[in-house]
Length: 42
Image (tube, rainbow, N blue to C red; front, side, top):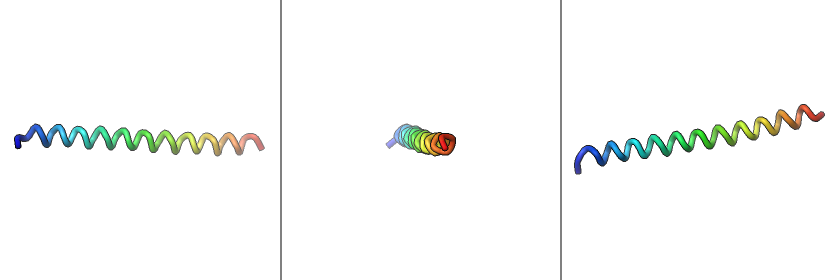
């Protein structure tokens, strides 16, 4: 095995982690916006 296998794997893990964090943050933001909207309707 050469080093490129590890380099590609490291990029894949990094990209997957970034996508995961982005999706989690987006879901959390949407939940917070819904809660804020609910409070402002009172």
